[in-house]
Length: 419
Image 1 (cartoon, one colour):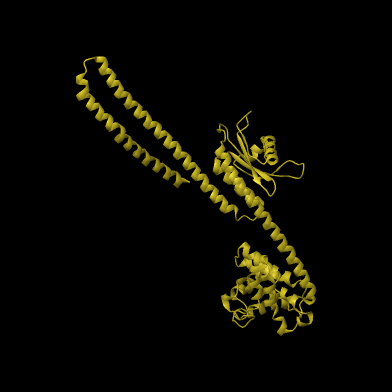
Image 2 (cartoon, rainbow, N blue to C red):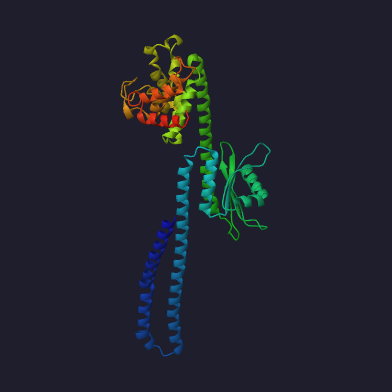
């Protein structure tokens, strides 16, 4: 913003210089030439003083009119540049808001960003997003921004709700000037699928000029972006719910199939989360390792029960599970993690004999958790090891079967009794 303002100021100064030089060459110089010609060749031929005064007055009038025209042109140019600079800043803010709103995951985050952007766009005192409530109920405030927005909301709750209802019922913007001690207000619809989903409202401050149609237009653009962002956030939430519930269904089916190892996926996922946080994974990767851990044995559902204990056939479950997940978009990125969770650090694992860091990190985390739960859980198909012996077994696997860094994170949790 500062850089833009500075550039605009420099541009205005350059324009002023160009305009002045043009005025000097196009008006002042010819006027001076005319004055010289009049003084040398015309005034000498005139004997009547009134004629002389009239001629001098005419030349002076031309000079004054020329100067007035210059200042008028200069003022018009400056005003145009100011509007252009304002519109450019608004366009830049809208583009930035569009990029930010495109990536938000939750409706409240989208509304928060829109209200903050409204403050920058129109210089308002406060901004609000109100959405439809239950049938027959008043609109509900989803977000607000501004230093005294909360206070203003309490003072102006009735006008705000009235304005929101008007926008929601008509689906058109509302523009109000300051009246009865209330600030100026502009409200625009936030589009939904069939009707306005909510409204974006901006309030002017004390002594604030009335909002104009350009303000209304730019806020309407922001309201449109917010409507798309809210819809996208809703779709993402639906996707997360589907993802979670279907995963739970598969885990339950897997527990029923692997009765000897019930709860294994949940325990592996819980420990994988702890190790992931110990390793400093971001939230997206933590979510990915969590769901991959829940589903790491999902390929067992493709094997008949009597083949699940056979080392030769059970080894197929990694590839089978990866194929199952790869066909479903929301699980696609989990497929390689599931496929490689039985690879060994030294390259002697399966199915692809990957080694070292060629194995996805999430797979290496699940490998440690899988081994630990298998050797320590009472519900495993083997007699469980006491916890100290199980931890030592994991330590012995570092550098051969297991990633040494993941084992170090595991041991750090063990020392803090967080397994």
